[in-house]
Image 1: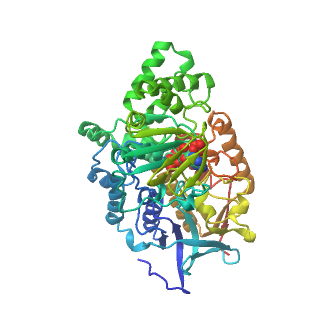
Image 2 (image 1 turned 180 degrees about the vertical axis):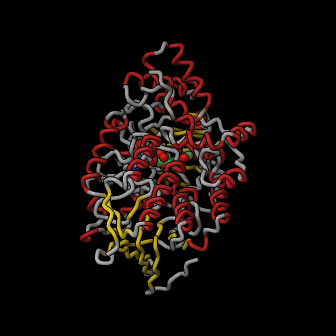
Image 3 (image 1 turned 90 degrees about the horizontal axis):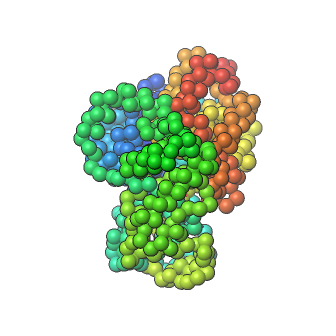
Length: 542
Ligand code: N01
């Protein structure tokens, strides 16, 4: 256990880990295994990261529970029993607390501590990290486990400060919960968080107004208590399943697209596959055919199929029409997975307001005014998303060689080598950083891959007495080009998505995650390591 330093004192460590979510916890566990002195600094009051903060009603994972869990410990996997096919936030948070206790992680996690700055001291070859409370940490390695969706997109609506009732952000939900019984509620936004929470809010509220700027595609989860036979089958083939995940397209078993092209099979066959995958629930439908994400004609087929489903469910044809995305390809904004989302618009107490038709004008003391009407409400829920992928890092004053800040280095959008290091920032690592598969994958699988790779790197550096590692500018440039090229071969750049930073005014428009696939990316990272960390500069101790 590392002692907490008082204000003005300096703690000396091998590694500072920023964030005690899924990645920070596992990183700590692995570095302890190397005998390194590591400590996690966490702004929240407990472990869990995204699952600590996102407590809005209906929050649940949209990868099947057994797939969205750590794989590093077979014992852990065998002793934990998930109750639902898609676990809800409280159960996932219980699981992460269990992991923290089982591996005795808490003694090396400092809660309620926000990191303010991290400066690389070139002479010492070490990082000087400062907390907002004034504590100083001196460490050889600085590891950002800050998450991809951890900084809420702050509401900035005209007149919002005048609103007299309570407001909530889905990404910072009150721990004690919110009772909407009998209340009139405005929900602004229709991304995953809104799509999960609206059906739950509508059960309590007297009236829900849903303010939609862009409709999203959503697939039913078909959530249910976990099927015992399915859970047993998963465990019986655990090693094989975990290997399949690791080498898959997006880190879960059904993410590998089928080899056939939607445009090359007959209408009946295509429909049969779409129906099967839709009935299966979740993301499987997005991998129905190999060409959906790359060929506009194929994409139009799945888009029309999804539109039919919306029309089947939503009774009012005008509402169904408004809920149907029209101006971007299917799946190029993060696909949502829902429980009763489209159905909720058949309720008398739910009304959809299309902000494309009547833009949001102002928030008044008593409600939300669009150019068409004013809606009186008792509470407002902002489900407006996150400053994704770069948000958390941009809030820390990170300075590398020559005092260059990370924000300067990323002024045109994030640049990295393999999404894990940035040229000019030695011994600084970004777990699931921009330029890696991260948000396009099952996050736990990608987190474990990065953490394991970093574990091996730090072991290697220890073995050979190396002081620093740094991405070379050339390898970074080549990787950024490769990341952009991979995205440009798909339809993803055609959507105004948070993958591109399009949801945050002024953010550079760059496709941030790597779309080359989890398995291919892992193979590449392994090859880089096997070749003496090709593309990185390693320096011995002076
Ligand atoms: O955020 P979002 P989210 N005026 O950015 C709208 C993960 N996640 O919190 O599309 C009006 O998707 C915005 O409209 P537009 C998952 O990766 C996972 O829902 O920009 N509207 C959009 O409709 C997900 O993708 C899970 O035109 C405004 C919405 O707000 C990611 O987190 C669950 C607006 C924001 O949608 C983010 O999801 C939940 C404005 N000024 C989230 N600004 C699970 O795994 C924004 N909007 C289950």
